[in-house]
Amino acid sequence: MIGQPVHKTLLPSLPLSRFEIDRDHLFRDTPDLFGTLWADGETRVLPIWKQQALLAPGTGVGEGSGKPSLALLPAAAVPDVALPVYLGRSLATDRAEPVGTRIVAATLSDEAAAALEPDESRWVNLRLVAADLDDLDAGAFTEALGILNWHHSHTHCPRCGAETVPEKGGWVRRCPVQDIEIFPRTDPAVIVGIVDADDRILLGSNALWEQNRYSLLAGFVEPGESLEAATIREVFEESGVSILEPQYLGSQPWPFPASLMCGFLAHVDPDTAADPLLPDGEEILDVRWFSRADLEDPDATVLLPGSSSIARAIIEHWYGGPLPRPTW
Image 1 (tube, helix red, strand yellow):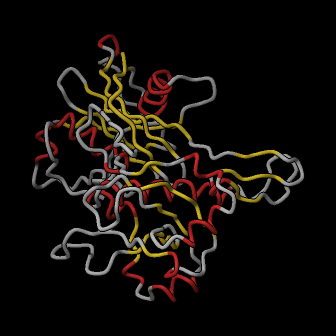
Image 2 (cartoon, rainbow, N blue to C red):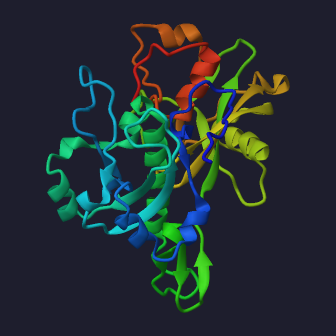
């Protein structure tokens, strides 16, 4: 029997952490797995082209378009698949597809994508639609991008350079020379809401952004480092701020290309509260304290993280509700 796992977090909404898929790992060992799936008329395919998914007919993006939904197509409707990956079985009870429907993500070539849907506006980016998708679509799209991005960057063996081949429904690549299995990897990263004694939040502007874009400080976990230690280190390196006792809030996959964002809230060490802010000048060009009034100011031009990001959720957790400021 397929059941719905329980997912709890201190954050009220993490769009990319939602899922209604049983990943069904035992079925990945089925001999001639994709032959079996293609022969099953109930199998549904999520087509992916240039990291975009296809919108279902009658749905769209933007004001007045209604709630977007992704196209889950019969296998026969997607004949030219460059790389298939078995995502698992649907757990959704409110969809046209019955519970237990098996879903395959399929990378398409330019030619195959154009043949399936030549209107490029019907192909959508996950960041654009994530918050508006239902749990099944959000989870399937996130899972698909994460594993397909791994395939695209691990086509050859790290030991000998031989071309690797996908196995087990696309969840393993094997080197035929070394006879070793290569498994997908996810890069853990921390992202931190930092609050001072005046209950202001610290936001930084990345060197790659426009000058009015601000978000939380974040960084990758280094080898041999805990999440908490990475949080303290990254904050100090990027801003010169010392923090105490980071509190874990929740996590969200970020498949751009392969991160797991682990969210924290932390307070400034009172012994160093008077120390100046020191952006590193390379990755972070500016750091500023923002009060709630600053974010509510209608004349402010600051752009905050989009609704699909865990950064947005953490800032709203501190703010106490939906943010009034524009997003990017």
